[in-house]
Image 1: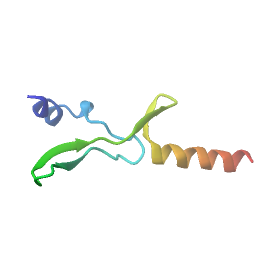
Image 2: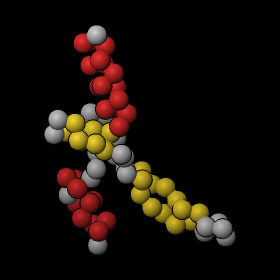
Image 3: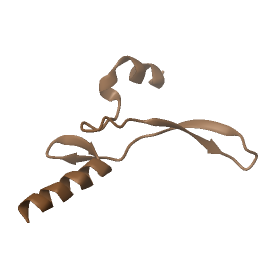
Image 4: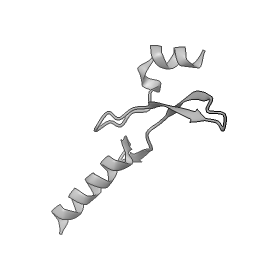
Length: 69
């Protein structure tokens, strides 16, 4: 049921507002090599009220430090 909600309503999808990085599919592998699918969500942080991934946040912080120095 949960996968129906995220496929219908895109506002539940965790995405970076700058680079649009979203969730990816990945697999857990047990010792017997059984594959279980799972989701890898991006590491989103709030920066001035926007959801931004950590890579974009570091880039913004670096560019801001270069401008003020």
